[in-house]
Image 1 (tube, rainbow, N blue to C red):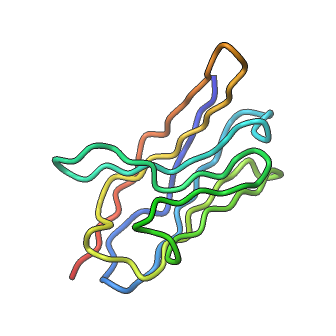
Image 2 (cartoon, rainbow, N blue to C red):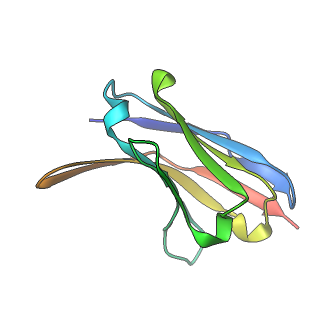
Length: 119
């Protein structure tokens, strides 16, 4: 069982920056693909960014060039640096850990952290 604890959310003005952190409990953190999802009120949860165990990254189009996902395997931590924030980035952001060991997918979630961007 992997436990994920997020921190770093808060209230920021448009154009500002925040850095989210997610610390994993699992000692085999390096084998997991890590991601950040967000869910705004009345909307479906969406994948914002993912960093795979090999280091490759993925970003949804709306955050490309503004957000950066990174990981520190020694600290078992994944980060989401969010710059040039917009009001439409307001959402609950959740950390996700996923490992595929065919035919089983192991997936874990953090409790979420609120990000509010004021105009």
